[in-house]
Amino acid sequence: QKRLYEKYSPAAYGVIRKYVNNDEAIAKEILNDAFFKVFRDLHQYSFQGAFEGWIRRIVIHAISDHMRRNVKPDKNAREVTPEDAFVNSEPVENLSHKELLAIIDTLPDAQKKKK
Image 1 (cartoon, rainbow, N blue to C red):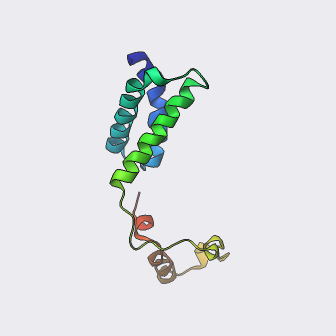
Image 2 (cartoon, rainbow, N blue to C red):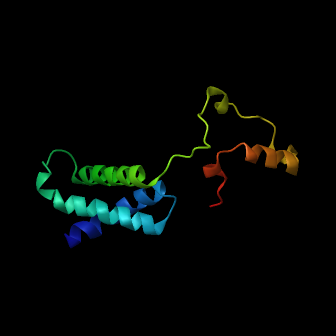
């Protein structure tokens, strides 16, 4: 188990961190959950396809499970419309501070957070 964890956990951890915006505590929790499932279900691996792919699928399911349990929908978020795909070609440098703040105010709260 230790060798499997040492071999496959770094790649899994990298994938998980992308989904949780580099939150290390959450990433470690999901990684532990995923590898608990890997070791619990190891006897179910059918040797069809890559072992790494089987682990990756478990990791993705662990991420999905975490998101479903812990991420609440943003009630202020609006649905994306086709018009959202069009970007104003006016360079940001030409916008005033006030205009830029007005554009930022139209973003959903989740997108306004600093990283």
